[in-house]
Amino acid sequence: MLPLKNKTVLITRSANQVAEFINQLEALGANTITLPLIENIAINQNELIKKVNQNNYDWIIFTSTNAVKFFFESISAKTITSKIAVVGNKTGQLIKELGLEIDFTPSEFTAKHLANEIPVSENDTILIPRSSLAKNDIIDILEKRNCVIEAISIYENNSINYSTEEIKKVFNQKIDYITFTSGSTVQSFIKQGIRLKTEKVICIGPETAKIAKQNNINVAAIANPHTIEGMIKVISQ
Image (cartoon, rainbow, N blue to C red):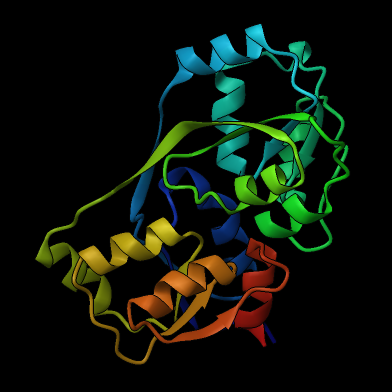
């Protein structure tokens, strides 16, 4: 029997990232509803090109699949000679598809683990292409390790606003699970003024869960590992 038969899962991540999530859930029998709460838009592309052309960084750190996507929309993979660190397997998969090697992946798929475990040397130069909403935890840790950090926001997460009628249409359906794959999806959810009923909230990682809890959202589970597969695993249990 399919473990998620007769279960409905709401997916809130951006529209360009839902296909794999939907396919895996539906393969287990789930019904899926998509309500994209954010859209990702490239920013600072000219500045990024200038930085990469003018500097020979020791490391480039990618902490999300979006960082990889927007970085290589402007930068040719063939020009990269820096060592590459990725936060997890999904991010690493995109790097490999570009024909590049991965030099480091942390033991747990979080930015903090990456910053603490990455085998850097003193005065190593590190480029971190990231979201405009990214926190500075990883920078603070690496600077304490005496690295030279260059962080640049290369995409932003914009909230998508829905009408009251559109929200009602979604939440008049029976929903068993609501999935949040980033803090920005949680924040956009709050802006919609949605009130939870019996839905169970599943977060991809501790930082996303932290934002949910700060907004009085009860988190039923946090994925481990912090991936889509990890989310599906806890939903299926």
